[in-house]
Image (cartoon, rainbow, N blue to C red; front, side, top):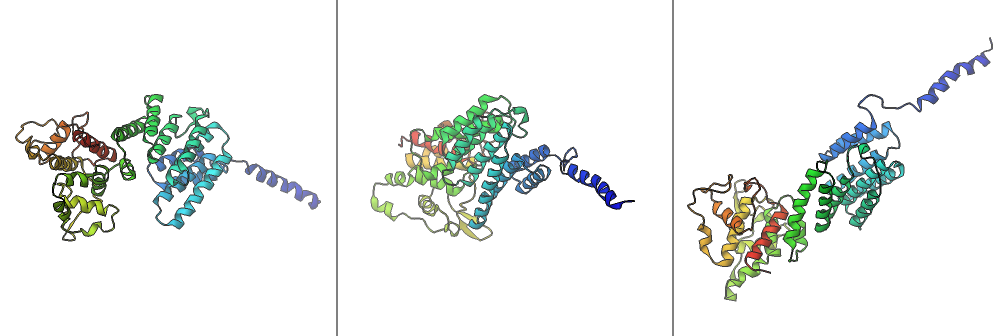
Length: 402
């Protein structure tokens, strides 16, 4: 037998098998496919679980080498790590990765659905990293995405084009373009009655609407804008708003006719926990005027009086603070007992016997603070930045301070 002729024939099936195997899908089980991994990865991003998200997007690339959506997801993961990093070196590495993944997502995007997901990834990456001209770049990505005509049934995670308006709304909010943010959230609400982004856009619209109303007719500085977007306001934040945005030092000083008395006033001591606070000066000023609710507190652990600048302010506490400001500026001590003795409260979560009841009634009856449509005051909930800004604006109006 001529083995020289036989060997090539024996090798042929192996060669054919190898050639065919290069085109066989690597991931074939029902749940091991790119679409499933993409959805799971994006949902992990929603929960801020970056490690799980990266694992899913990496698996997508294993299943499908040139997956635009996988690289879109990875770019958002890297941008999320930039926000978490404190070290400038690590930030630079993650920033580079985010933009490299964005470039690959753009390169491999073929269908409009992939291009749509890339546009959203670009908005989210720019919003997280905030490099030079980031808001302009995010707006460009929004415009590009708006010109696409994706089949919404194939938008695995985003589900509808209104997602574009929601995320550019978030970008405008972080860029302090509050009116544009409100309009973008409004577009989502008008697009679909019960869409995926409807509930979140409704929350965003209410927040930005409060900020826009709070800023109407007044000039809000950088401190106020930064605090306005916060989900909760700290004692240091509220102090900064009162001193910087309401000019409380000047208003209080105006109540004392003798300048020498004003100059003699000063805080009794400097709490140890405000030494590195960016609002140290404002805190010392508020302590000088002894505003009720913003006094130092005794700390059992350190056995010292501390200001606790990073502690969140509840809505009940804010009512007390603003009531004291109102009393000090009007000189009307009757305000502090105006609602004593009432038997029934209009708020189910604030009893007439509560130490904050009088303050809550003073604030709501004057339209300085608002209760919920459900009837509750949300006394223990943290104050949002938009709520704090609006309340201070309303207080200024009641006192004719412009």
